[in-house]
Length: 244
Image (cartoon, rainbow, N blue to C red; front, side):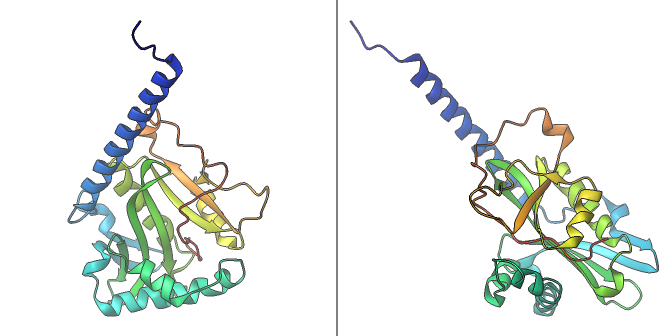
């Protein structure tokens, strides 16, 4: 007689195996990106920004290699720009949580510094990570000092993140924005779209939305993500204050 195999269960096993292989491959791609010494090295022209009265140099480093003074500046700038926005929604603000996030060993920093006087102008905290089952560059923060806001530096820094992401085979750049942050329009202006993982306001109202920009080179090969039922389980915080 032998044992009969249900064709549907065989198909499910095959799908599970394919999913496991895909996630394993994504983890390898992320691990490879995290081994980089300098993700900005292939893009030397993007090490300088000279526009709208700003003369800046840019560099990328790991959080674990940052001087304490730069960590303190990054935290203070984030708090100055974002605390009242967090407190204006259900998230609330926690110094401890934000500091832990900013100094996590997985964190990378893109930093803009004045060529003229060495002052720090702005930064992005980002990570190479798995999100909804695929490899992404997740932008946690993009924060600029008041005197360099709305002068195209933020847009330039996002271009750098996209170049780094797509060069290293990330499928998309992803970020979380608070709905009460009027400057989230900035991201939509530079072609970030509502991500399929962004939660839907059905049973509850969510104070944030998730935006992304796909790597067009890889988009055709992308597998559909696991269904999230409109609920995003891995919310990062939170790009957003006067970025232009």
